[in-house]
Image 1 (cartoon, rainbow, N blue to C red):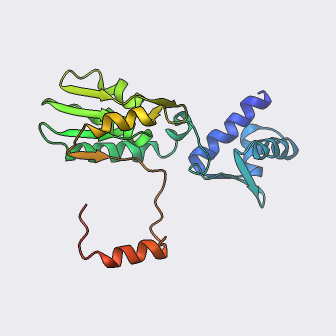
Image 2: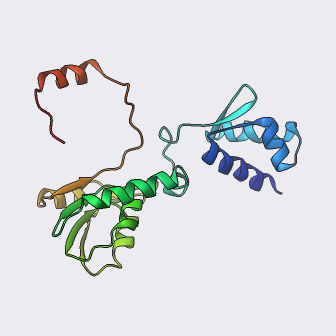
Image 3: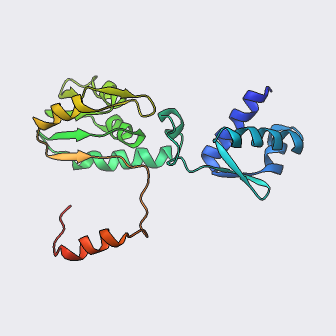
Length: 197
């Protein structure tokens, strides 16, 4: 196994487990602890993981601008379940907008509309997936391609959106902190007696 293969195997393990002991990596890859430590040092310098007390820890995938190829390996089953649940919200003649990301792509994979559906999409992946269904009218947003998310952003997208209205928005997020409350956000919530979703 080459060094590159070994380091890719380390990252693959971290994507599924989020942390791995150095000793376990050495055993599973059949190399010495010294070799694993050297690999981890290189990967840490490259910003792909960090080391802590005899183990490698996956750097938060949301602080780095990871590619969709890496992100789709994270929580893949959960994303498919989210997509399957989200598609249940669609009704006949809906006009929806899709943001980008791997969960949005999972939603697109679950859309099998038998009635008319209009979709405005920022995601090139979602558009390619949905293009196979003749019942779906797709408006692909234009603009600069953001390579990490395989989506479009910028002024051209905003110009198209100004002329559109939708019944639903499906927005992917990289993370939600249920415990975080900024003072500004808390006072804003307190000043609203009614919030609709």
